Image (tube, rainbow, N blue to C red):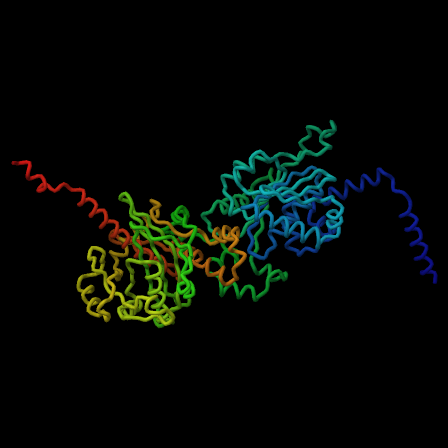
Length: 611
């Protein structure tokens, strides 16, 4: 009974104390203390004050952003990068009046997604009751313009604005620069435009002579870099390494970094084990390593092909679209590039048969499309399309080759005779009726060896042998067979490297760049997930080709180069492309020779002058 009375008495004393007006000076002191505490622990401001539930790793990331002058995070998908960037921007704007926070985006639509989805819909409408109060009472205002997106905080003068990372953004000022998915941005633009915006926060108390001019109170502009993994030759990897080095060595500027993979996301329920296995099965190997395992992909230690060689040649923005049967029947306009009069097209093919492969990665045949445009003595080479086909389905592979030959309007088929290629050649020489197309929609004739001997690279006896096997007597002479030798392979590797160095062969842009551009089109929102994946696939295959190439190590013997793949790697795509490219060189040589001979003067035509 005495204990109960004691508790009641203490409760009354607390209530009376709570009702008693707080001394303004005490209140001011408390406000300063809490503000300082939250600024130094911005993660606790987000969780305690804004009441947003955070996982431990999110606490760490937010805390490191808050105490850094330069912060760099490389994280896999599902690590809530965009969410944390949006949350940090809002926390910074609330805690530091007159903050000017600039977030870069690749396009204005990407900027709108981040602000609309993360800041407005999630943070201000759902996750935080405090932010919801501010939002509903006009203390946080969102505006979406054609060129710029803004978030204004009228009660304290802070502003967040998001715009595309281009030269037109010059002239702004910022106290915090956030580079979201920075690998997609240009290093030159970041350095010359956005880093030049940096200036100390113009806090009102700095106008007081008591604080003015004291360096202790000057707040340096912050830079926050967020991205997912990609290739080691890209600028952001060197910047990340610099941040890591400066974290240990720089005593004046605060550098911090963070990295995470899909397993961290699985541990906290942001991803599931099913997501992991799905990504492992459906993504390309390089995409899986970069996007999910957060592994930066580099080159072989003794690489013959470098990532930079391919990077400057990745200019083809639209792949050739493989028609469906419905497209052919309905004469659908797929807007594929029309073949020009001075253009030659070929397929380059590498076969894999299920009984000749020893690992899952090799269990696919490869077909690529190469376009050769000859003009003014120069040959422009465009790699328009790459696809693969299951090695266990040889009949399906044969159908795909025949369809692509006619629908891509090919002149030649460059065929590797290794790994069952000769058996495939035999089948291609036969007549073949399309199971879904009528006679007037399909040419059933088979294929045989090309008659242009100056394009052939195998011995004459082999050519004669292949011709003798031709079944269809009206077969189309278009096949250029390849049988690799040490000398021929070396010549082809050197020729491909030369074309890449001289920017004479163009390949498809990165799949991530294509996807970003594709999302800006109306077509993107009308297609199913499966259709989108089909359209993106050639770009993914092209990235796999580049990965194969840059993982090849060189070894020189008797003046010839031999390239070897790593133990778990492949080189089917790049080998087949080297074959197709070399035949392109032979075609160019032939055209050069014909042009030179046509320009020679025939003296017999001037015999009449002697009379």
